Amino acid sequence: PAVLMKEGFLPELESQIHGYGVKTSVYEGDIPSGCEYSLEYTANWAWDMAMYLTYLHIEVRKDGNVVGMVEYDARRGGANMGKFGHTAEKMRPLLAKMFAEIGS
Image (tube, rainbow, N blue to C red; front, side, top):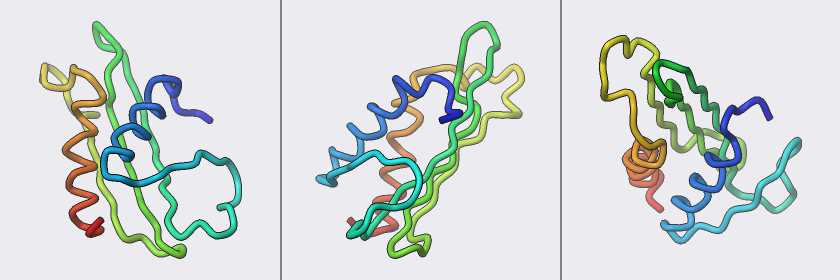
């Protein structure tokens, strides 16, 4: 609930996951019964001439055990102009790496 810009982030995350043929369901609190895999994320933004994603951490768990994890960290971006850009484009290679690890 504390994710800034959640209204754009969550639909994009779901859309990219659906691209791997994985069905999603959003929930808060306890993992729904019968849910074999779950995904938890932290996403933070900052302002520097524009809002930009500074940190993203995603974990996928199977039966409670971490089976995939990726992280994007631009907190030390400073004058690095690469920190700007669409969140979707920053997320895409991370999810590709994670799904390759999981073996979707």
